Length: 459
Ligand SMILES: *[C@@H]1O[C@H](CO)[C@@H](O)[C@H](O)[C@H]1NC(C)=O
Ligand SMILES: *[C@@H]1O[C@H](CO)[C@@H](O)[C@H](O)[C@H]1NC(C)=O
Ligand SMILES: *[C@@H]1O[C@H](CO)[C@@H](O)[C@H](O)[C@H]1NC(C)=O
Ligand SMILES: *[C@@H]1O[C@H](CO)[C@@H](O)[C@H](O)[C@H]1NC(C)=O
Ligand SMILES: *[C@@H]1O[C@H](CO)[C@@H](O)[C@H](O)[C@H]1NC(C)=O
Image 1 (tube, protein in one colour):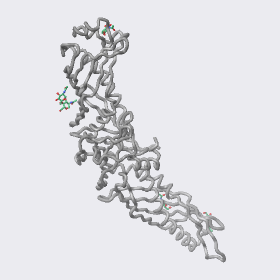
Image 2 (cartoon, helix red, strand yellow):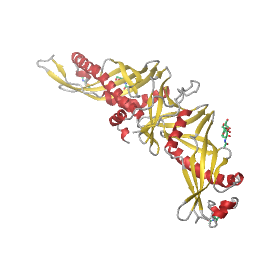
Image 3 (cartoon, protein in one colour):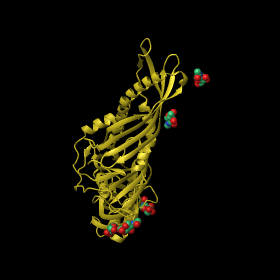
Image 4 (spheres, helix red, strand yellow):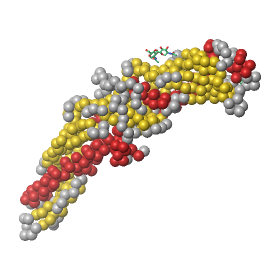
């Protein structure tokens, strides 16, 4: 998981081969609920960031110059609020109390200094297709400090001097620290474009294709998916149609809503087809009693098989795709159609294969989608019956009805098991490191699916 490593991940991305200009799309809509969550989990990092070093304060008032050591003991962020600024980005409002120890002689002094922070940040599309946040304004507004300890022996002059010193230092450092925090966040968001596995030897990478759309209610990121097979990008057969997540899809309650186009799914299937992972062999084991895959069973309705194979031989079904599978999304209903080419072969004792006949098989499947952590998984089940036609025969006339009964039932379970194992591995959804989908729900609409979900940050 090298791309987990931020800097290295970004470097790798720069070295990746160039990718097709247009590829199927997805939309990530980040809603207000997500900002509330960030406000919650962001308090602790903000507190840590605000623990700055304050150099000693020089006091010229006495007979000789005194350097008064100053230390921030604690920062408490009581309030952190993030809002969208339409067509721009984000607004941050925070309230914090600094607890400060002033090592004054003869006895130390403890102060609390309240500060209200406001900052605006522009959200844009970075040069390598990652979201990029940049601080445009930042201003700390200090209230007068109050003395917690040692108040009855503090001179007003000293208090003024110390406060002035601390405020001057903090005014500079606080915004610098917030800016660093934002830089760190950008590196983290940059992991959006990391490669994630789709299947054996194939990977997916999402990246932003246009600048984000910011409204008062959400930020929408237009992303595309590029698939890699053995490290090379797969060029989609058709130019991608741009995909928009309709506003009518009510997603306001969820932190994030991810819309994935039907085209993206078809692209995944194309990838699996190109990788050859959808093909399978269904083999019969002669020693097994209830395995009907043998020539004596076929011979019962294909006389020529009985003639050619007086001794029972086991039979193999070689299942290959006849065309790229097609996924279709209708409201509340996802289906997948497969066209298969099935070759039926007899296996002789010395492992020679002899082709008996081949079939064209059409199957419609119902597709159920679910999300686990950051992956979209699929489960298929039969939708209606298998349709089957004889494509070629080396064993004379074949009664399709008989073949349908036998081969149809033989094909179903292994095919579904195989598909479900593949789709169960899941397709990585757009995500960044350590951020997971939480209580996701999948909705199927006309031509796309929407994953509405909470988010949870886990290190
Ligand atoms: C900050 O300090 C002030 C003064 O001591 C106090 O009134 C206020 O409640 C404190 N706020 C927080 C969040 O600690
Ligand atoms: C200074 O404060 C302490 C408690 O903080 C109190 O006991 C003491 O009487 C005070 N001294 C004066 C001179 O006010
Ligand atoms: C062929 O399959 C049938 C049906 O499962 C079975 O009864 C028979 O024993 C098998 N023959 C051999 C030689 O395995
Ligand atoms: C899905 O929709 C198709 C087309 O409208 C329909 O034929 C099929 O029966 C539906 N399947 C389910 C599981 O609702
Ligand atoms: C699969 O579904 C499509 C669309 O509903 C239909 O036209 C086709 O006949 C179906 N095929 C099979 C094998 O059921």
